[in-house]
Length: 91
Image 1: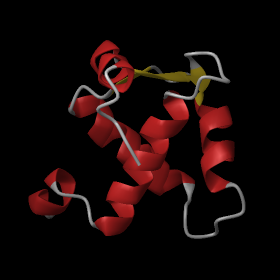
Image 2 (image 1 turned 135 degrees about the vertical axis):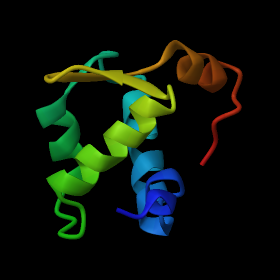
Image 3 (image 1 turned 180 degrees about the vertical axis):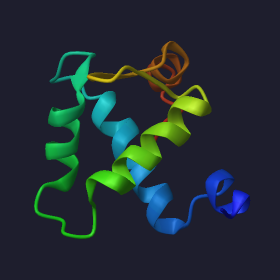
Image 4 (image 1 turned 120 degrees about the vertical axis):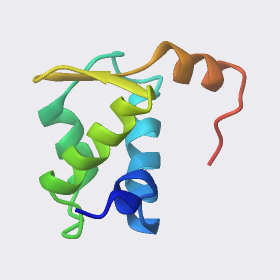
């Protein structure tokens, strides 16, 4: 396994991670997302985004402290929420 690819996701991985964080910070949804809801929202007809890529991105984001997750649920970390409140997270 290439450790560099785990630490520095390619441009597609970065876009996916960004999409995950933005979904988890949405104001029109509960803070907790089921993995199924999040996956469905992210796949949304994009054939290039699949469950394995989403799961890998979730693991990277959890490892970095950006989100928390269980086998069933995913949520933005308190730090990510605070950065969003400070308007430091932008698209």
